[in-house]
Image 1 (cartoon, one colour):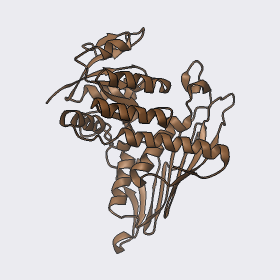
Image 2: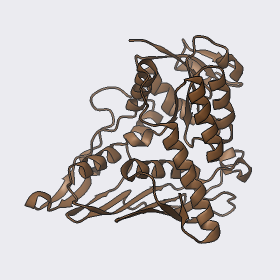
Image 3: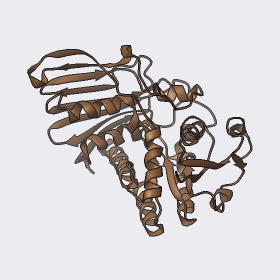
Image 4: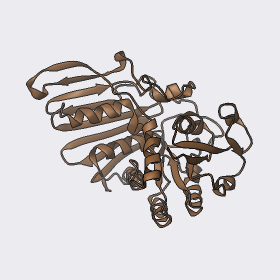
Amino acid sequence: MIKTGVGLASYGMSGQVFHAPLLHVNPGFEIISILERSKNLSAGRYPDVQVVRTYEELLVDDRIALIIVNTPDPLHYDLARQALLAGKHVVTEKPFVQNSVRGQELIDLAVRQGRLLSVFQNRRWDGDFLTIRKILEEGLLGRLVEYEAHFDRFRNIIQEDTWKEDPASGTSILFNLGSHLIDQAIVLFGKPEHVYADIRLLRNGGQIDDAFTLLMGYPGIKVTLKASYLVKEPGPRFYLHGTKGSYLKYGIDPQEEALKNGEWPLGDNWGREPEPDWGVLNTEAGGKQFRGKYKTLPGRYGSYYEDIHRSITKDTKPAVTAEQANLVIRVIEAARESHETGRRIPV
């Protein structure tokens, strides 16, 4: 297998938990360098990987074909642009960029440079989302009439000295958790006709938006996306209702927690959810009544980088395109305008 050399632009949470482990176990990649400005945290787990102190060292290294821009959100555009101009393929963390005009600039630049540009939308490979796609493909709910997805957390304390709580950084819960929910809705239903949003700042002492309800306009189906940083006791993560049945799913995919615990994403049991956590399916599709636990498919974040390697080596279109990622940003922009004006905003 052809190995693709990789440079990791940061070794914060996303580098430690997601990118480095997923790349390390993939035989198609070799992590050449990890950028750490002053620390050497990666050396303990990846002793054969070079630690560099400047981004320029990634750009000029001919062994590196792919740069992972997993830095704070405000840096995505500039660092991705530099990497593309240096002839590198690029994967950015979500959100892609902070406005869709700059997103389109990067898309156009990637085309001119003949390089891959993708965004790490790993939650397309959550086990629950893969299961929902299977349920819909098999028609187990009949014609879907309502889809509601939640991504809630409990963060009632404002973390100090982080760009994620700084309004000057341009971030918010819409860019953070909303990027996942919007991307999943687009995968299932395509581009919405319009968006209607209610966005809130709920936490004491908070300075950034930390809760939202987003209605995505599609013909024949009600699509509601919700997220909040003040949910101590979460309800169902997904509600789906159709003309033949319903599916409800509590809990969240186990992969992130396993990665945080230092597990390698390998083996037959990776991403498998215990039976008590499976969702409930109630359906009369096919003329037979069924109500009970419906097995959750194993999650597989590794599929993202398997697809990226295939796209680079075989010059194929990636599963997560920059155009799709920029549509997520356009939806976020429309949501903000909707909240400010109280109107439905066309996308």
